Image (cartoon, rainbow over all chains, first blue to last red; front, side):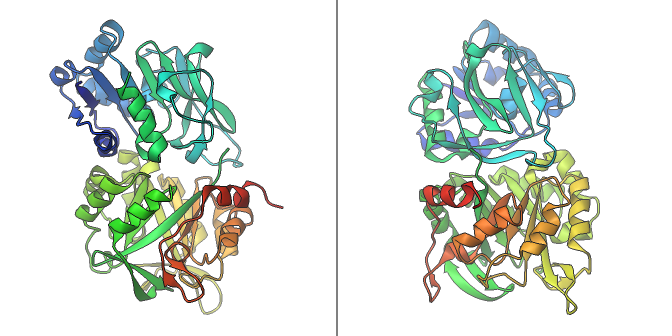
Length: 202
Length: 256
């Protein structure tokens, strides 16, 4: 199975690569559309600004190839953190359009100093429906989150889990071949590895 | 349910771990990678590694050690020690660190934190502030491993750093460092009152109850400690340790 981690210059690719190595896989890291085109499964990681993410994807000429792979060829893809947000239709971070693969939008947390932004730390998932991605995960497992924006889904059936941080937000979703986690499975101990394993096993 | 992060702070000197008292009297603790493995087993929230002689010696924390840590760690970790350029940050993040911690150079170079936050995102940039009380009891910021007094007020500096785009502030009491008598709650509160970004409290934790105090009374967003996680028992025998999740949940869920 050819697993490709998309390198578009956003965030720490190495941790993601290491996590797959821990379960015995050697993923390919690439920003080359020709290489990405041959993937059986894709990972879209990312930490940072939404608008910069979109700009970088365009700069590396990845926008079209990813649209093709994901919406026409139905290649399974896992978006992590910013990667997940890029899959939505629109983000308030930069007032920018995303891929729109999932009917959802990305909005900013807004509290009045009671809760700090970003949501940074460990938190649990309220599982909304049975799914391959969350197999063997319990609602007591904690995952590492670090984000200032969160996702709202239009369709409840796309929501795999929600998490509470002032508001109840979508912490993981799935629509057809498209999966996303707001948290970082590659930085969430054994339970994070379980998520990664689950995606590999799809 | 959101519980504050509990973060071991590990000090690097010549590739080994040491623990200090008031930033002096270094005592050898052990091998850093071994410590990471143990913290992995404890399911530790996050780790901080600081090269404590880097800024003094005009160098930056070595990329190699960061890579070795990254290869081993199952949790996020931050690194610091003489970080002074965007290039330094890029190398360290690429080597596997989630965040970098900037102290001395945040003071020496006005635009550094701003530039770094712009390029790498605020969530990757932690500004750490080391504080000592002056002879007349005023809080002052010190740099270069606590050897140079900037005479700056930590509250004003923390605010300035937030404005520059720092993602978190690590507030460290040099006076309390290694003493295990408890955090400087007044100091912590003075910072958490004025910034809206997460504040990590550090310096003085000697028992779990201190973590609770810093969280509820100091309003710290995360609790960091050194001695608490590397020593054990009345004679401070070296033993890497970390509390169980159940203990922490009970301790930090509600203030009674």
